[in-house]
Figure 1 (cartoon, rainbow, N blue to C red):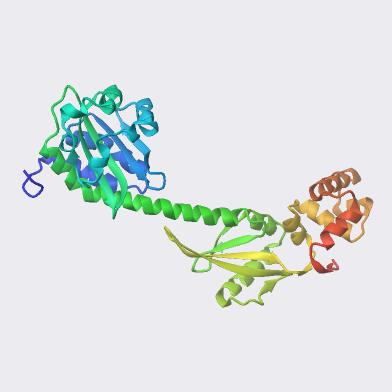
Figure 2 (tube, one colour):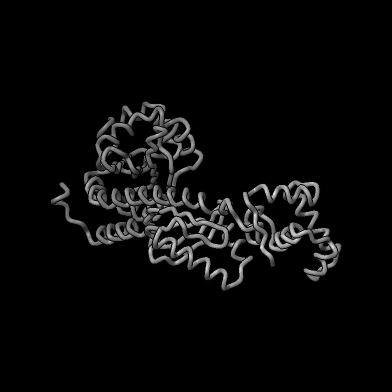
Length: 357
């Protein structure tokens, strides 16, 4: 019986089609293997299933998925038995579905520590394995076992697994590629999400699809009209990549994120940077020193020389409320008083210009 001559029964065909469908439904390595476990055991008339992904950098198996086996026993495999496993390295190099008895005689296997202390703990006796490869890299495996009360696997199960091999291999290669892509996306996300300067993410149609935390806080200090003008200036900068494009004392900088995730392709990150020659306003103080909008407004009023009483009248607050905010500002900027506050802010940028209103 060979792959080309074996005729699938209707029940086998239905199971095969179900497994292939599930392999194509997910891009997550663990979910792929978990989803096919029951059908795979039914197709091969087996009892137990385990699956690993080879970690080439650590030279070990990890990313475990299992069915009808003991987690504690499999943990021992990860920690110890994979390093004294007498069969897996021989099964790996076959790169196709292979009976365990084809790489080691059953009576010889049963005399090993691996069989008696690991396999027999979960009642495993008869095995068949399939290892999927992307070139020379093992991207995942299927380890299927029957208990010692059962008969050995046959060429039938070898043929069925080899029919599934290209579908399983493609699913695992795609999962590996998606994982790498998500790691890239995560790296970019961390880069701009927690950046101290406002960052705006635009898609290739120049639609603003995301703003980092600093940008969200910054936009709250602006009127709706100012927000629209800022985004319009940013879009103009993206179109022309004009180094002279700026907005109210801020200059733009652009980074291209060449990521292809779902519909987000060729993303652009536009960052708003305070210019060295800047106008100090409420928005600038809020963004630069991580203050609340009220605290930023009070900072600006203190720079203009207003007393606590004057600020209270200007903001329609009590003097006690003003003093509580002032204390919070001093603590955040680590200054002792107004003179030091003025020094810290005005030395942050050169050639300060205070707005008149």
